Image (cartoon, rainbow, N blue to C red; front, side):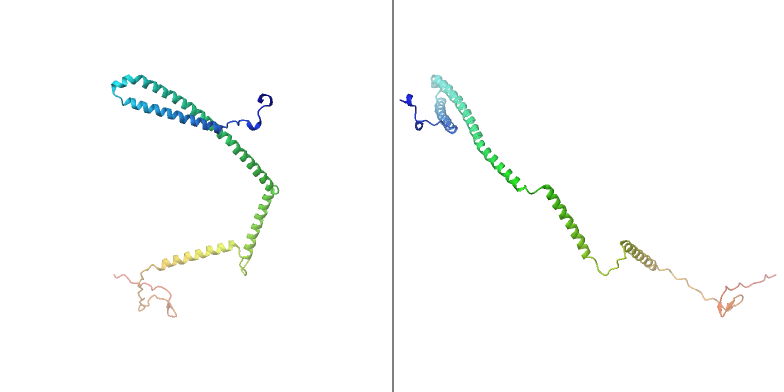
Length: 221
């Protein structure tokens, strides 16, 4: 009957997923590890035998060791398969994440395009230039309002600089004279002129206007 009418969809066996396969491989590795543990236990017991019994049990020990090597090769193969399944599962999960990232970035791009639709770089530059001009005008206005009222507007900066230089020169001269005044020059005593001998002295209104003449002395014979 099944050949004529086929199997119903409700009786279809679901296909195993990669996760199911990975779980099956993990069980196989667990079973192999148990077999290896049993062999290791028997080999440890063999090593504890006295030399006479070791010789008789040597063939069995060699068979157990060979069987252990077989299990280890099987375990290595299964672990490699499990690693490949894990990498594939990771790649599949990344597909979903990448799709989410793609749609999220696409929506963000649309939002950015919509947000900057009426905001052009030329408008922004013009706005910044206007703001800069207004701020410069404001600074100039502030300087104008802060100007000192009642000041002589005919005095230029050059005049002020010259006057400041003159003040510095005067101050330097004052300091220089002060240094000279600090020097104490000894006074020269002035002897009064002997007016008793008025010979050769010319006076005017009682004031000496010339030097006294030296007396003329004759030569004695």
